[in-house]
Length: 186
Image 1 (cartoon, rainbow, N blue to C red):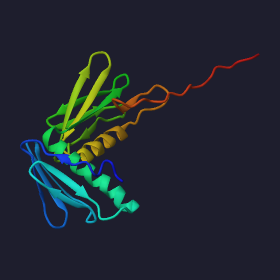
Image 2: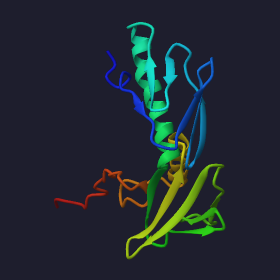
Image 3: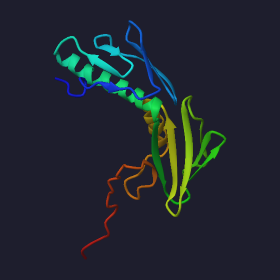
């Protein structure tokens, strides 16, 4: 039995959920509105206080979809109430980042600065950490979209394993390699 799927999703004050007959869900809250098409096998019911997901059988597919559907709904509710924030650290001498309007301008060792416009629903920020470089801040209400934008920013210059230079997630630990060993022996 899915332990996550059978837990109801509590709705905070100011959040409304609308579900039509084809499992299309709309969650509206103080930070905005999200919509998503859920799998038709899982039944989703909303009351003013909570959202409950139920599955038709105990097959492995339905068990997996049960937990997934509940988590997707919970992420939407959290997104419209609190939002999501991810931090990316820029590590390397001379590597810089700045905001140009709402767009991001990154100098990361290429012959040209990299320019990124935020997609709809995403907001960029830059923090300068004293002596440690720059931190990119990605904010939004859709967890999936925030994660995708962060992955695209990290891919501009992924951290390398020798000195750890590049763009990395704040919580990411880079496995370091030794590098060349000096000549030993005679």
